[in-house]
Length: 499
Image (cartoon, rainbow, N blue to C red):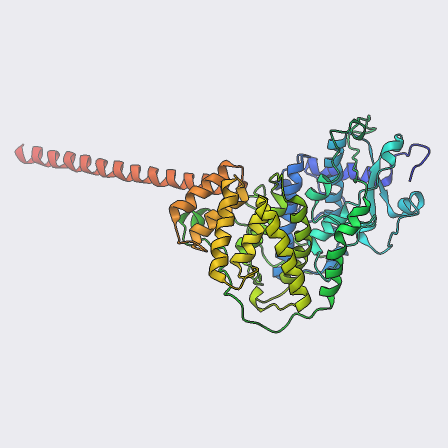
């Protein structure tokens, strides 16, 4: 892939710089852009954490589109406002990665890609292959690195499911979201040759890199790919009898939940000649998880566990054991979850073939191995299936008890995701007796360990408590003033009578 001479700035380089300058200045991006207000609320400070906030927004956009009945990839991709939104996010991911590598980027359109990298199997009509970012051609070592097709993880995040596979141009598996996609391309600080500094030609130039694909990358995903092909052909129709569905995450039993849960309301998104989907309100985009009030379509999975899956993907908690087993299990289980999310019926009514059930059980067994070694993410995901009545045994009560034990064990290891989930279990009485005090305790523990949603709730709860205290004090003062005023009137009357 090497090129002998340095390349000048490309048209996309200028476009990337222009998009960013317009965004920072608060000017409309050329052609208009959907979700511009929400993007400003995401606080795009060119940090890795900002990519987590973007992924949260993308997840919310996906849920709102599904609930509003306009989750139509082909329709949305012809809308200029929506396409500009995706392109802007791709450019931004390149900026973030450029900060990490400190190297000059070059954005290439498909015409340039075909000319410079003729070996790439590009598909002309594939929007997600229309642009990619590479490194400064002045450095032969960096030029040897694969390109980063930044639109691929965005598309997978928004539209990926069992019947809509996303095939990476350069092979391997596409990450679902920008945070993971960029994270896998970060420089190895232990290898000095992988980190270098180049003088960037313009202050707005960006860059990106992708780790080389190893031979094992394809072998790792072969089982998941086979399952994908089978699930595409498997009908999902008639109901079966399973354990009762766990109630959705309403937290109505808690005064905290009813008064201070952060929410993101979503009005139906109109489909016109130009589809311009916009979220109606974003109150706390910086929170790792936000909720939607829209209920046009009921999710097959309770909100409690929908949020858990998002947090497992977006909130990073370092794991020292069971990582390979957890990732292997998730590659299979994620495909089931994507397929289930498409259904307009409870999970208990979704049926899979015997082969699919066997594949899922093998993944659960692998997940249990990871949990038993101490991987807290595996503990939480395994607990989710047990609480849903989808564990490896038919004993629901035993499974629920084991599930709570897994969550408690993960919470005791200071996993903020586990602590937040445990607080919900106590507030709602799911798998445990309802206990407000314990719910509040674990909510505060999650907050102390950096869980942003929990921190927001604790802060709002404290503000509510302060308001109540102030009101009580004011009421007490008012009573005192009333008594004093009454005494003054009484004395005045006595003086008048005496005089």
